[in-house]
Amino acid sequence: MHQEHHGEEGHHKAARAAIDALFDAMRAADGDAVRAVFAENARLMSTGDREGVPFIRETPIEAFAGAVDKAAVGSWDERIWDVMIQVDGNLAAAWVPYAFYHDGNLTHCGVNSVQIARMEAGWKIVQLTDTRQSEGCEIPDDVTKK
Image 1 (cartoon, rainbow, N blue to C red):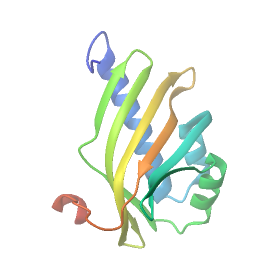
Image 2: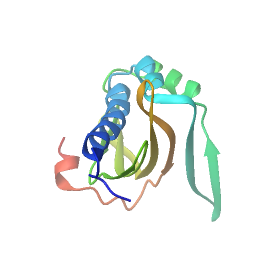
Image 3: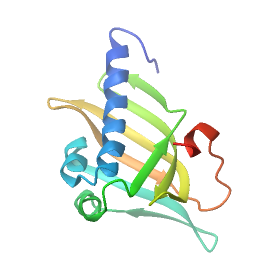
Image 4: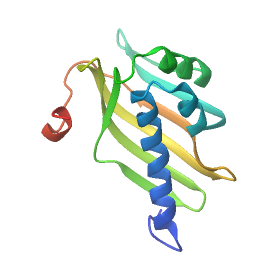
């Protein structure tokens, strides 16, 4: 994988912009903007452990966007740092550590694994899978102070 080869630097920035657009839309409580950042047939998944048993769960994009619409502006604040993006052609893969704050209180943290594809309409998220933990979050000081 390479990040900056044959114009890939622009693709890298565009893929990052799609990620930032998602979290900006969540902060703005703008479900339409959330819908716009995902490709048609995109998937939103969460993985974790329940009583020691691994699980993976899918949330329909429409259900997620609807929940964003119902949130108060600024109440959902997903803060990210140390984003790593690899690009090859029309595909980008991102590893995105995050901390999620609801009404200013940390509720959970983890990593978003994001697949972004270049499409006719621009770079769109085709899959986002996250991990979630409510304890043991190691969040950089500059992220907690935002």
